[in-house]
Length: 265
Image 1 (cartoon, helix red, strand yellow):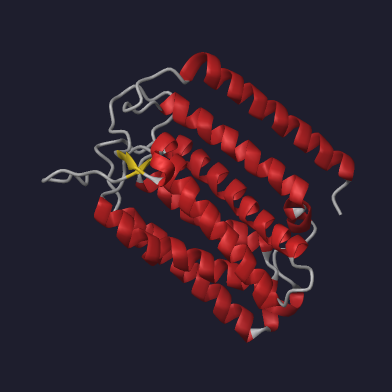
Image 2 (cartoon, one colour):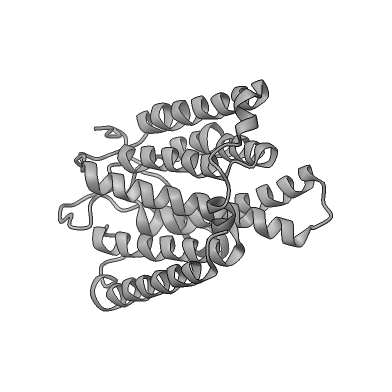
């Protein structure tokens, strides 16, 4: 098991980074028009969220559990069922995100920024994967007597509710630039996001491969970062912010871009 002192030190460093990002955001980058996209503000918000996810993963035990486990157990290498399931999930993630999601995403002429978009996708993917595994730890704590399928169902429900609210009402409004239409939003959820979590969490429940779970989320979110051409933090050009429509309790949510001639360049 990773030494508790090192985990505590990581938590302290992460907390300090979060506090520094929050201070920078409050003093320097939060003041901009609500309907104008600000890359520095978006990166600050994203960084705060990544730190939050890492702190939750440490506190919940998700990070120690992953660090203490192998990428795959030696016995799995001779298990045909493990190979079939692993290849199936990998092929789905690559096709759904690097194929379908990437192709159906609006960019509005935003340029490819290989290193910054790669960093964004890696940070987003790793911390999101760990955060999802924190829900698994929470499900274990809430239902210690549940069968495996019950733990999976509870964790799946919590992740689904979180993602539906977080992505729709915060991330896609305040972090991501405009990259969808109402039609693509409706299509992407059942074709990419729902089967992603269904397959990946089922694989984790059956085989306990936390590293693979995180890798799949990272591959998917790397595709999202490159696919929507996430502007680097120094981006000073103009790009559409998310179109906001009323959501839960009247709060804004991402509604998708509407125009007769939708640009896909």
